Image (cartoon, helix red, strand yellow):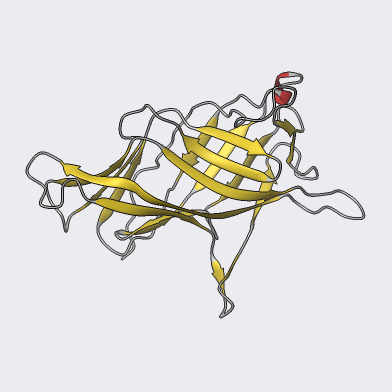
Length: 211
């Protein structure tokens, strides 16, 4: 069932994951706005359904871009669910990179950074106080022609989400749910797609992640 609801946005810090002290993640070109996702992924999926998301941010000016600490947004303006379900995102989120592995994370301790509710389960909410979405980042090139960078979401956290009381008594309170971070599947080969990373400031330059 398709349901349209208000744009969800989170703003937080983009910060490198733990790497050796002599190195840190970086992104280029400096001060470029970028986005990826929504059309063919990534998506959040649980037993309640799934939702395509868009991730966006602005790389800071040099030399701060080599510290990889800047704002991150996640939004969905027209998600598709299998049931009448809503999704709320809040708190501080980060983008961390180690080599070609890139995570979108809401680290603990935080309170209910991701909340799902369904009309089929009144008085219940499905919550997470920390979330980590892992994917593979492929850097693009400009020669012999432009090839955009790409992001492939592929990660399962089990268990991550927990049912809780929401204005009443929830019959499944305390039970856990698996959370998946996925890309679209193509044809019959069950192979996930990588989505292009768009440079909104200079479309002819790929967004590069480095160490």
